[in-house]
Image (cartoon, rainbow, N blue to C red):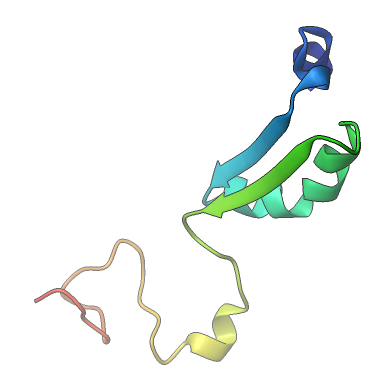
Length: 78
């Protein structure tokens, strides 16, 4: 981020922080720090794309191993 800010990102009107899967979780966890890098006039958005991480124990009845195959007890694709 320091390099991008030094190259002019510090004067951006809009800023987007995004990630997919584990990067999606990271974008949510770091969105406040990301926002603080910019002036108050910069519109910033954090976007989490892909998987969301949650307590898997509570959803074990619908869970199956990855990658899902024909042994999955909750087969979605037939």
